[in-house]
Length: 271
Image (tube, rainbow, N blue to C red):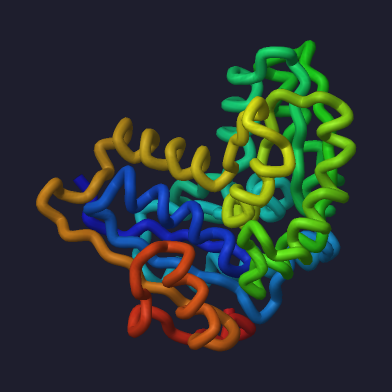
């Protein structure tokens, strides 16, 4: 057993979808979350900038004597995972490979849709992982650069004309391609699940990168006998690089419990 905390980071609120799934699967674990809200979004940045930010995020989290780090960010997972694994002695886990493998197993027709940030789509990482499981699959990729800033501003609910209009435009090519499985390749996107599902229709199965990454991390910790004691209460501490109040309000809505008093500001440029 290992009572040390698990570190989780993302560019902003999106990684809370991974936090939520880890808490559901492993309620006794202590979690330390960093949301880089002052520099969100990552997906439109250069590769060098994404790697710089990711290194700083991990350096901050490693203050807490972690047993593992989950990169709850599709952009960092596709751009910097290998580098972070090489530079750190503890397990560093991404969300891309688990989601890609799940999509490859679940698709019926072999026609898989993928939505993500510009950096994620540009990397081709999902296509490579999907091909390893199902070489005959066709992947139809669509960058959705406006999704992250809209989520960060709370524009996530059905009936919001702005997010519904943007979603309809982004998803139209995937509907035309008749995909039967859609990978939500950014951990912000499950917060738009109701809007996306309404647009794509019930026949399309959605695969969440954040949730699949959380499940893969939970399985690794079980296999390694690194779970917290069964009677551990668990907990969550959040850190952000911008305003605490805005994050606390939206995080409480997304997680379903009040995180006020559990969020602190950090100057990430010190790391």
